[in-house]
Image (cartoon, rainbow, N blue to C red; front, side, top):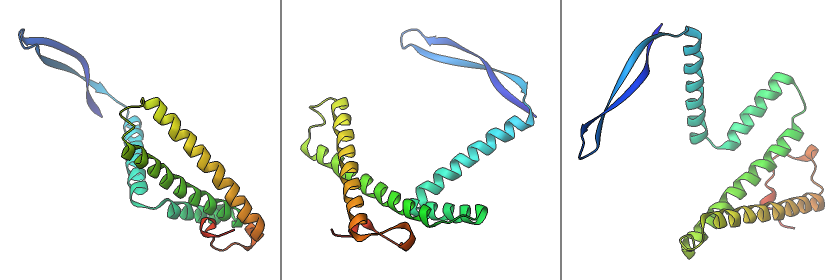
Length: 163
């Protein structure tokens, strides 16, 4: 298979006053092995299809389908994985909502013009870690007081439970 690759780019001035440049690109005929072209095209297509999948599907469904695939493929006990994945998906959902709320709060205060960007990022990271720590304490206390274990879980939403 033959592909034309740019081998030399030469610029010359058209008009000295306006500094307009015209570029000439010289192409050379290159022989590229077919497996390199296939590998690059397959990689690009997989990347695009995964991006479309992640943009159009909720991540909970992706996790569930992936876990079902693992169960069928490797035949293992899935209760621990479902328990951890349900907690992780809820935690990701709560953290993303709280990050959006923090960003909106900073924009409403109009302090993003006054403070430098690195201070804003530092504040955002501190708030995320604070949220994560509070969520860990909350979830562990709910699971401990209700004596919820991975054996007796069907579908749980720990964040809606009250202590």
